[in-house]
Length: 258
Image (cartoon, rainbow, N blue to C red):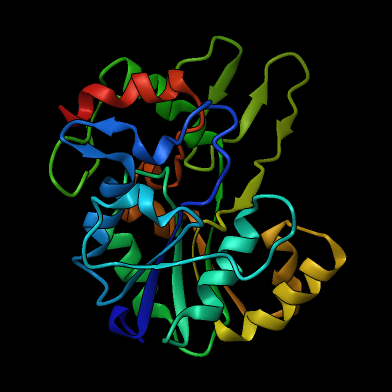
């Protein structure tokens, strides 16, 4: 389908409870975190929506359209923001992303948009194994993310565990004592995904039931999964899925945006 038929939708209505402040407005170099998300999207999408009930906080964002939640559920929820953006979008599909995900990988997003045909959802499906090591790698200066597109380049990422022998790209962990291979858990990445208007009835059903887990809709619609092997060709450490939840995580990434 291509990105010109898709509206980028940035969800900026979260509570930031673990951060204790609006994390979208935290500075990363000369920009706010939400600018680090929005600006790369300008190179892909003609239209960008920002879903927030406080648009006055984002005066630094130019050339975007602000929309508010369509539902007052008495709580803040990514599902409500996603549903609101999808319902108010002029295009048949949106690309949804959180305002706290500053490592935008434009090549992966374009790849996803190019795959879009008749699917209701295109969503990455990956392990969180590599993601768990990202912050350690950032903290130790092993990943360079300092160009304008935040392209990821490995300098020397070594993952060592004296109790585990990591043997293959699926990172199966073999226990030395039991000789048992533990299964690799994989997860949907629903806040880095494409959604079509066909999802609206399903979201409305979930909201009516008081269920706010986005992935619960996937069993009812046409879903295409982007597998980990595909993702790693464009983002080897899957850094684009990392959202910044705590002040400690924020401090760990600061110097990459200086």
